[in-house]
Image (cartoon, rainbow, N blue to C red):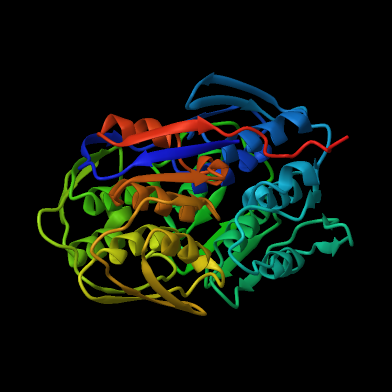
Length: 428
């Protein structure tokens, strides 16, 4: 196990290159199962969720060649088993995308219930109902293995009773090779959903409307391999934008799509930062104080829930009292108790948090409770007085490529330290 040790107080300045989008990558890699030829995927982030996805494909029988840290050759022609075991699924939520991909290819799938960050109840009911509307039979064993099968996948009109990124992606994967037309309504519209649709279309799928409220999918009988470059990571970019504002720094964030960051930009400007947009980069800096705001997370194009913890850290040292309303996940404020260790004044009541700004945070030993909470604690450590030690950083490594190294390059005093196994040997 490793931990971060951060000595706070530095003003971070310089430039950072953003990696490929985690949320796009973990959907696109299972989608390679639909190709009847090899795929070359570029701009893959070098993170643990991608490594696990590639391992799942490899153990299924795919040929996986890592050409460099961001480019992978994948040939799924010789898959031997439509199975994702618990040992792999327990580490990442996105393992359930293999359900839709395997159904499209084999009309059968066996995938263990997914793991990932503990953000409260995240049932897969909408995924299952979508599969059933396509003609599948789905059962879940007591041990958590999901079995799905169909004699044939048949297009249908499917209305989701709530906006779900995971269900939108999973049903889109399955429907891409279903017979006839599938119409998906009340779908999620995040950039990584559009990216997946573009990748599937590059392989010969016929998907229209991704990024809008309605997606229409004309099923195709076969798909070919393709070369594809994954979009930049919206949340990594947003995290570095928040870091610039938090540290009163001046950071140019490169390899981004500014339109994907509009909701984040709007809130950062209200909180007191200056944001300058260019074609594929953005500059964020701050000279004045941080201002209080009210923040509510919403499905895209609203403010992303995955940026809520990072923004909350800024509000802990802003002037006045701010309110954060978490409208996506039930358990997103678990990190609040960790920030209170550092002197933050946060009161949580269900999905609402009230943050009263304090003059400064103080370094303390804390623990990352999930991926984005871990990033928020890093930001807190960067602005705190003294030393902050963050344990359980494996959560952070699920979604941020070379996070410590990128921070060091712009002036952060952060290092990764090995933590010995704390298991106590029995006395004899």
